[in-house]
Image (cartoon, rainbow, N blue to C red; front, side):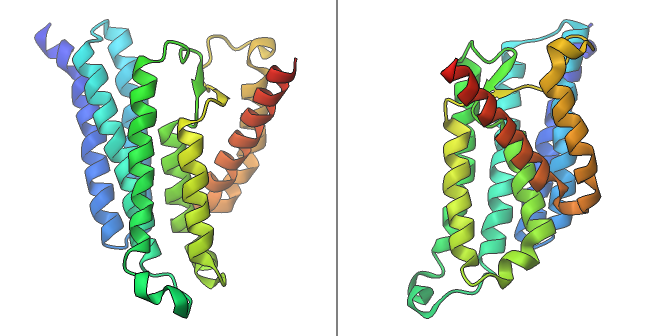
Length: 235
């Protein structure tokens, strides 16, 4: 019985371990490997809660460990990826004196991810929907963007401005009050899962984009969620 109680927390620790490796890979410039470890961490994150419910061994300790692990894997790791990538971007002459400091803006991703996770822990509204962008989706967006589209961003005349603008936008989305649908299915019926089915069916062709697929999929998720949020508020 004692062993069973520790299984979910062990899976959470695997998530944390994956996030730590992703951070190291990010700082070494191995962005694809960092992306793979974030995906691995997301897999562990998906199963730890499920296993805890199946074994009926959920605990307050597990909840706190889950948030701490998530901020490393889905907060610090993507921030480290963006930080490492921004250090390679060309800068205009007028920004060269502050060029060494601009990449640190990336760590706002980790800060706002921590705020997002803390809000999730105390917000009773987030049982069937999310309020604000989920941290795993945010992490997959950034890791996929750098690993898959980093070359394109580097060729932009203002790649640094593009990145800083996205960091600002996604930091806001993490802590916003925008309702975003969950992918958890309570049944397989079309009527109660119509939005989820539409999202998944439209996302499947995007997988053909390869490493950068998560950028398109998360963007589609945001567009659909924001449209539903606006529609609900106008009703």
